[in-house]
Image (cartoon, rainbow, N blue to C red; front, side, top):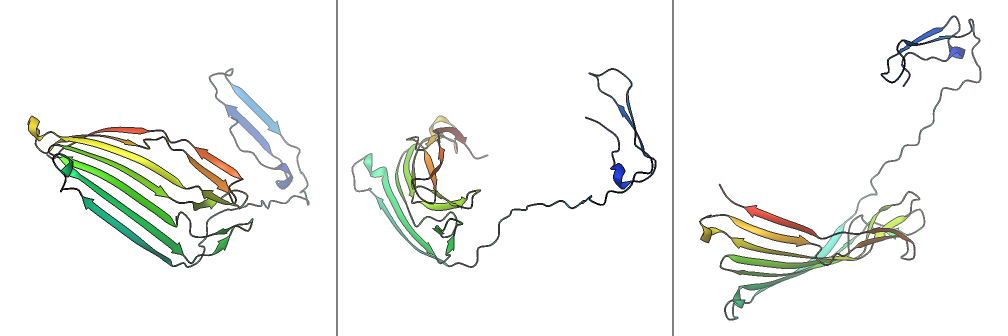
Length: 220
């Protein structure tokens, strides 16, 4: 990399000399450059120092009202015989809608970013003695993700994910207040997909691997 001071001789009339002393372990020692520009250079009338920039940023899309409804149901199966009376079923469904009305540059109508109209969760849990387990499925409908570089609407397709966890309390082993958990996300390896404006315009595919976690919890 060159070091030193550089200037435009056409904008600096008069004598101009530049000395450049470089130090590079891969180059011969005392690498000195000497530049001598013509004296009394005339200014260039065509010189235009103006540089045009294009700045891109996010702006507010306007006011919006979000309305929705959530339905939830919980059922413990404590009437079942041992050990199945430790099972509990939980479900919930959510519907949302918003008043934001926008169009992408391609004319696609989009609402509020990252809002699915429909989503639901189904959770089955078990707890008996030192053991506990949990199996959960989470799903959401398609939603507007963001705008592409071309100004089109990138839509995330409907997506569901299965998660599981098993745990064991270590109180019986003399470790009161401690437990160990083994959990996994995206048990089925479900991928994610995006498209631009219409489903035939595929834009993105993302593979989400299973993620396993072994956790030791405790209280001091």
